[in-house]
Image (cartoon, rainbow, N blue to C red; front, side):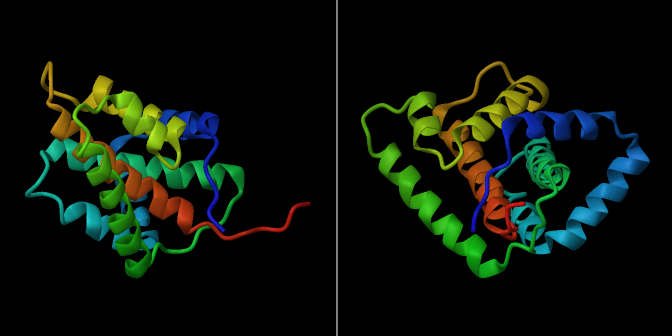
Length: 165
């Protein structure tokens, strides 16, 4: 069963990550590579399509969502290639439908998202901390949000259902 990280835990996870020293960040980046090798491979395969800071942001998003689940005590499996590919296909189809509209706003994208609050929070962080330009086009915004949705959704889909206590 797919579970969603509460946005307050996402904030706590991001705050925790931002407090890490370089050594601790690198150690946890290696750990995420072991725990989510296929998602990391997916992210790293995007180096020709995105800037370096975008790739760094996608890794931060993966780490923060995964840490948010861990903080909540929700165990995770490895997101398998087939599940990631299925997520890519369904997300791309949804974004193609949005893109076919005459005009698309950020609100349209967030409303259509599987987890709008988390997507919005992560995009705010991207905009504040990673965006190096004053403005970016809607096509680039859509590509960033599409990738974020794939990463977040793949982690959410890898949660292990736990019995209620």
